[in-house]
Image 1: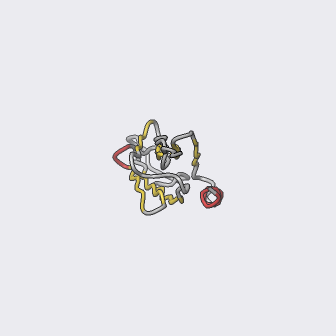
Image 2: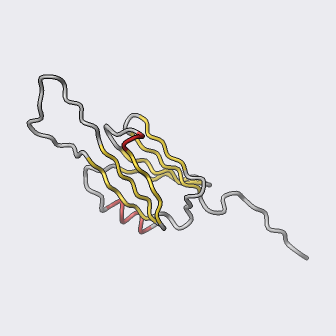
Image 3: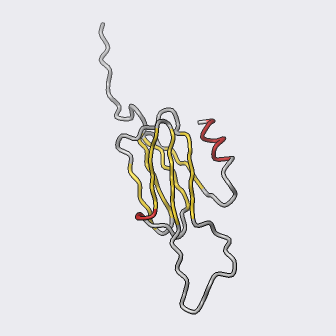
Length: 116
């Protein structure tokens, strides 16, 4: 997990990511304010989790942007923990928070018979 920990430490200050772990899965939580399920793309390529999100701008009638501090796009790539797998992975976006659940390999608890 040291590669992941290092990658998290190198993210820009405006990107917020939490990684949670249970006995059988990881949950990666990414703040994506203003994004929806239609404007977020999550992919696993090799041993990397990629997240792309774009925020939709809604400007009230009669107003225009004078300055903008929030980015319109988020593009993050994080190395996966060695025991994470994309088989059975799921993701959801609710109220600007993306949750990606990645099962752990071998978490099914298969019993190995012992001879003797």
